[in-house]
Length: 185
Figure 1 (cartoon, rainbow, N blue to C red):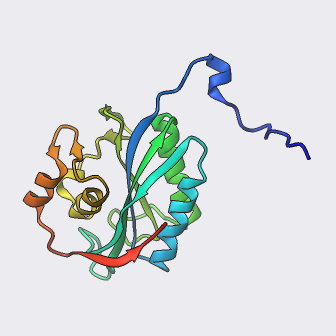
Figure 2: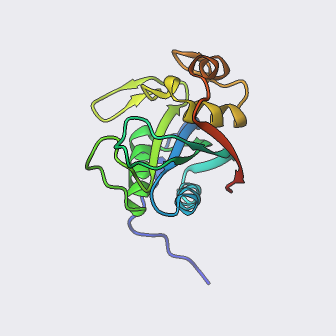
């Protein structure tokens, strides 16, 4: 049996003849609507199935209290992914948004409960400021729900421009952040 390549997929390397750099990326995933565990596992699977993205590690699951949302918002389940990717930051962000949409994410009210939230925290050692994206994520250094799970999978992690993740977590504290005896693959 032979496979015919998809006519819709273009390999950028064949166009430029160059190699694409591999960048380590940190992604934060959260869900506080519907089957939170299934939403996170589905997002992990979708990211793992993304060409040019290799999921290296998945943190344990944390349950966290919502920040700044409506009073009726329920607690989140959160994980952090460590991945290697050769995708451009724009394509990786597009993929994160596509995964959110596939799980019914609606972007209507800021801080509203959501089936899935996928945030790009870091993209290699790059800093990026554009209308669409700021890297490192502009509030990651203040969010225990990002820092605690990240520290689990990368104990020596450093958030560019802010310092060691362990020190940032110590400053922020872990009130309202509970590590569950639950691991997703």
